[in-house]
Image (cartoon, rainbow, N blue to C red; front, side):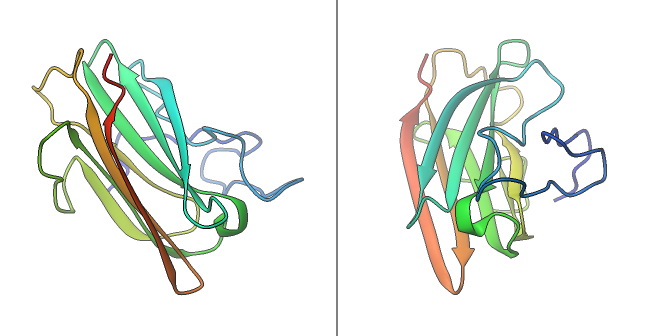
Length: 150
């Protein structure tokens, strides 16, 4: 998926530069986040053995949409592997990649951003998310249903 309109914001990294792994095994919580559209962080949900992945969910009251980033963290941070992020309005089927609601690939740091569909007002609606972080041949998969219902 193209990263059009997307600008990674990583503590200590300059644009176009990979984030560093300084002092620790994972990036700061929400190190990768939407830089435009008024998105605010509304949830951080670690998953996988050793918490190698984390869902970071964002909300924009301006766009009335949610956004999802799946961050590779801890021992998976900076290590290339299959990674995907999928988001859908609560109760909807997850989209297939490539789609605005899905990003997948062989990534070292994160998958996303993935967004709920344009034109669907997500105010007071829940979102469902699913993600995968592969590390050393082990697929760490997780889905959460009914998040950010406010």
